[in-house]
Length: 312
Image (tube, rainbow, N blue to C red; front, side, top):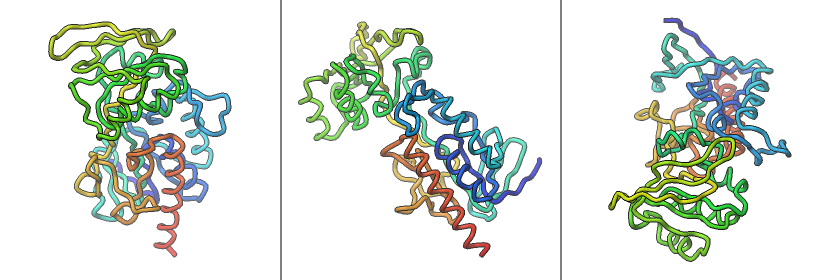
């Protein structure tokens, strides 16, 4: 098995990882980005991005990430494809095991992101970015004067549904139980909102539509009676939570109760010196491309200063 040694390695190639690469490459740290199996992160399954600063007419998600990548490469970032199978962070230099390579590094930036929990439908996958979304903040403005469905029953679902009422004429919340899991204050807010309707004890079995024309509706199944009904809709927002990509680090880095990496307040430092976290892997609140990029910048500066303090 081949072995490599580097000053700085970045895990992840979404907005956080590539911004960290850009800043650290310009600081002559010669970063190596391990891209993972989904290079570009969640933006690669997004179509139009209208809320990233600097693109007044919008840009396609995959194209935006390609711009990020080229900019980082321009300053000397090296990219490695493949997944990290295991990490050893209790020794220094840190050890990262890939399928056919072992990489050691002095500093590590973790930007592995989070994955939206989805329904697992073929039609959901086919229409993702074409009327199906897992982020109301990102995509709500595309549904002005439309009717949409929101799937979920927790605080996230209620927040998404409430946010969508700023644009949509009607938001129907689909929940598999007969009562919400959201906090009482969130429930009360939703019930008072005249634009929010509820369908209880139900799941989405199929989403209708085509990428060319968008979503046209969904087939719902009542989990108690087994009966199915079709509901017209212009969009479907899946709001059943996110899973931070932190399984590799359990038992080595501090995680919160939802599995997100904990960082020191006002910084990107984890509980292990020399290991930094940026983007959605450590952000359970905002989860936006621009906040991830900002955290990537912070992580690069933190890593640069940490390395400088060690080498004088």
